[in-house]
Length: 107
Image (cartoon, rainbow, N blue to C red; front, side, top):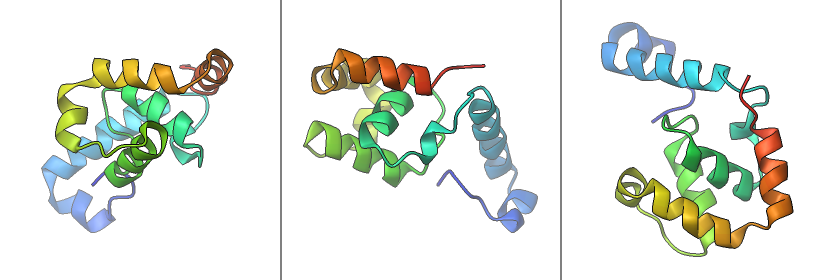
């Protein structure tokens, strides 16, 4: 859904154009492109704290599945970000959390 949206879609579909602009603005706020990481802990931790989905939904759900070792639905993501963050905190060491926070610094 998010990620690389074909130019033709952006040009003709105003709703997708607005979503793409939100994604670009959210991505531009960070020093490092953490959404390109292959580390599921980085992806799950950072995206759970970001109100705008800045990576493909499937990539985020897979990262959550990998870290939490359970299926996570998009409805759960939309309704329970604080709960997911508490669950992630149990799966990430303090040193890993500090490293992830440093990687995901805002400008």
